[in-house]
Image: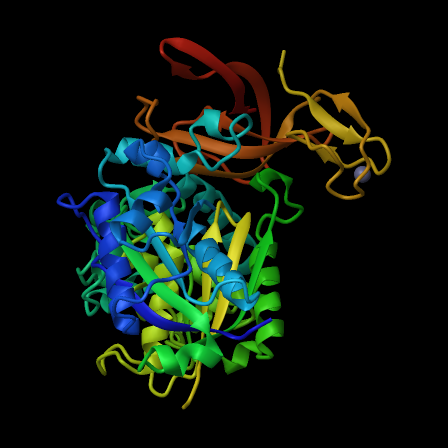
Length: 397
Length: 114
Ligand SMILES: [Zn+2]
């Protein structure tokens, strides 16, 4: 197996992008990544596209064939990868495998989703199609609902509090306000969403015990990256190469009800263990992380399941400021899904792009984790039934 | 009559709902088909206010409960407010319309506090 490096990255601002089609967004992000790598008119060997809903939301199929043509990358191999909200992570993983195996040298990975084309009512239904079609979906359960049921159990078992969740929301929206790619650029205060008498109006229950500000927005967006063998990186690009030091992927039961302990996100633990083993690193070696905070509770639960904190300690770490920029382990400096937004197929790619920027030390001071060498991402599919984790490492030249 | 079939592994006794081709614990392939029996105990629940396409209600309360014979299933809960519920509470179960698709009822589990 060859070492694989990320040599180019690109993203377009997430949000409501009425003016763009899904294909526009994927194409813009892809061109940015190709240009960032400095590939010029050189082609790529293969294209992987992470997307969950083009068939449902845009009534469009074969989007990778459409994108490879739009980018004039013919006759490169091309396919779309669907793995729910972890489609982006899965697309990156397949790109990494293709290069590591020696079969392809230069691979483009793009992830995108256009979710604001339909009403919120339809978007909620679209996301709910990942639940079990016979024993969950008919009841009207939504992904926020799954997260609500999970949160109730986590609170009862581990003493997780609403205040801890509120602090995650405030931290991530504060960082999102500094990120030009973020969907949500509004700062929120503890008073406004939690403490004051009118906070229940600003921040009403959404999926009890979760409230409105515990959930990510519904977004349009795309991100892309270019992979090649580490040994070829210096020839192809002037960028500091970022090594894909390890990845892991694991699955869990389709339904929440069949897990022996529904608070135990086994797929997160296993995916992270595989990634750490492959990277020959430990949780304490990570300097910056992008976790899948589609709901605030997930940032805390994932930070425990990957091994940054003991079970029940993740929320306390948030309150103590350990996960802020400047803290011991900054989490979701980009603003996370909570503020950057969560165009489902784009998210797993965007997380890697954000970590690459961190490891190249290219971000402005108010968003840069000083001297970050190792970063981690968690892309959480279903309600934890398919999880992809990456560990990335800066390669000093 | 609650129209649910659960699957009890003939080797290790683990109860599955929905069905799997092989036991999640021991990989055995033979199951006894069983029905939920008795009342149910509420394991977890949520009250959702942003409903998916296809529902006209103001909110839904949905939970997972475990029947006396071990079958675990999701269902809608008949209550006005999540604050009236708590985990571990006993529920009765019934088989009723849980949504309508093009005017036709789709039947499923409904739980009610005892
Ligand atoms: Zn068995």
